[in-house]
Length: 354
Image 1 (cartoon, rainbow, N blue to C red):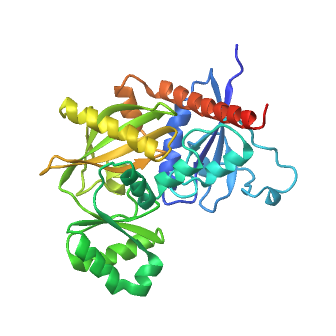
Image 2 (image 1 turned 90 degrees about the vertical axis):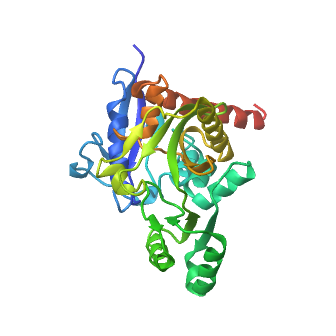
Image 3 (image 1 turned 180 degrees about the vertical axis):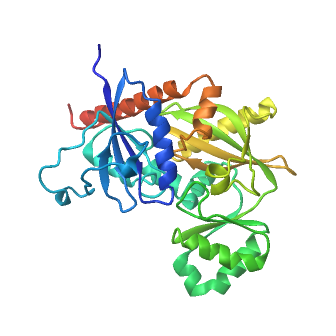
């Protein structure tokens, strides 16, 4: 019998998506075939300290020594945490933005998902949309505002937004997911409060024209030759697909697969792969779309390089509909992580003249 592959799961983290990360990690943990894998679970608390726990099911009640990311602060006597392949099941800043990917790159270990650059681009909505535009992908008109700019020249910022964008607007933190900190602005007096709310989560925000539209999602899987899943439609229970709608109220509706013409589905799947390549993603990503009701034009909204893996998350659901059930999806993602690391090692060895 083969020795089980040791999989290091990172979850929790310092971001506003801490609880979502734990829920996602539980689903990944539950779908690791015990005959093939052994999980090493690393819980990261909201202070950024990490501790090995038995599983993601009750990480906060576990006992044991916390350690720091900084090796010189860990003290003597702590056994190293080692795995064959690592899986950062971390949403938002500190886990999805390239920072922990950089740590894993320095350690020269295989890990699931995009690398440093792809993760950083996928986290920053403003940089992401520039990457989409550079590849000719259709995106909704938007403006980027930094907190120092708004503090220094708020009237000029307001004039710029009013001159270039039409109501309604969506105001979003540039570097956050799960719809945290997002406000729909229906009138101009609501713009300032929405911006101030977004600045509570990030020093850079995106102000985007709001469409009367339908929302779709597509899952992408692969490294150099990624494939797209079937398309799924999201029917928000609230006015838009916000954090409460996603994770707390359970009122969101889904049409799986989406009831759309084959040509539209094919177009979205093509754009999903193009968005994946534009952001140099790897392993996995979920790409979200808007279909404007009046024009029937499809817009790429954003890419999520560590999509949710909860029981209601679209990424595993879409692959299950495409013929890849959750346990097989886990197998494939771990294999892609190892494949990517080996390819990189071959390239480095060749560069060294070996």
